[in-house]
Image (cartoon, rainbow, N blue to C red):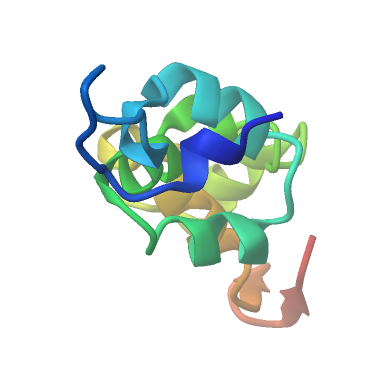
Length: 107
């Protein structure tokens, strides 16, 4: 099952086999939401469809803490609405200075 999906496009009488790039991006994103961030980033290097799915907000909003908007307000980011969920995740993975720099925190 699925053996043909990993083949490189080869021609035969019936036409080329489907490849990994033929899987719809939303299907890939649905799978990615169950993977670790490290695995998502590794798979994103395979092809364009995986890279697109790995950038999807749908994937990264499941990785964010419930209170991520409160954490963003503590950081005083100038344009938090312009950030993708992936960028927010990456930002929150760094140590955060809270209470005017008197505390450092990680979620």
